[in-house]
Amino acid sequence: MSDVETQADETPFDQIGGSARVQAVVEAFYDLMDVDPAYARLRSIHALDLAPMRASLAGFLTGWLGGPRDWFAARPGVCMMSLHRAMPIDAELARQWTDAMGRALERAGVGSEMAEALREVFGRMAAGMRTR
Ligand code: HEM
Image 1: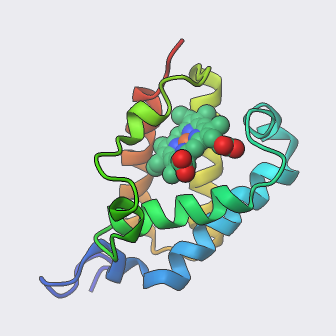
Image 2 (image 1 turned 60 degrees about the vertical axis):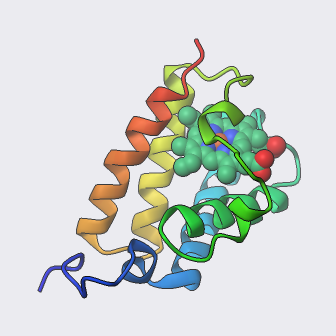
Image 3 (image 1 turned 90 degrees about the vertical axis):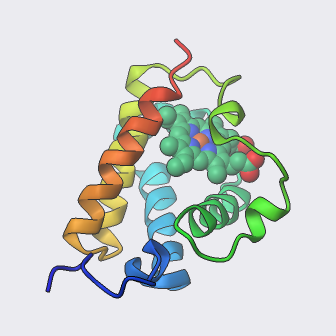
């Protein structure tokens, strides 16, 4: 059985491995952004303290993947694309984000089919967030 072919009532959040896995992806993502010079520009537009972002991205991904929706409940009507509209996102920054996330999915041990599907969607989202 493939890693995304599971029970019909399972959400992607369940399939990926629940909170622990989402948290692992987010930690790997910001750890990479923090230390790898390949993401220096991306790092430079983030606040010095990444702790609030670790919590926020984990909350967003949890609800977005079909898990508990606390993050969305706390931000009625929030739009992820609009949140990024004021940021200076060009093709290189979108690429750095997608690249770091791709590596984070792998580091966190997300199954290959799920990782591939997410890479594809994140790539589209990031490209759509370009403001220049
Ligand atoms: C296209 C490349 C992207 C860039 C350059 C970027 C950059 C940023 C920056 C600079 C912040 C604010 C950080 C801070 O306050 O320190 C942010 C917030 C955030 N981003 Fe992105 N982002 C990108 C793509 C994405 C994508 C694809 C997602 C979702 C899959 C995402 C999810 C979030 C979340 C959840 C927040 C926190 C919002 C909040 O708590 O107010 N970002 N992003």
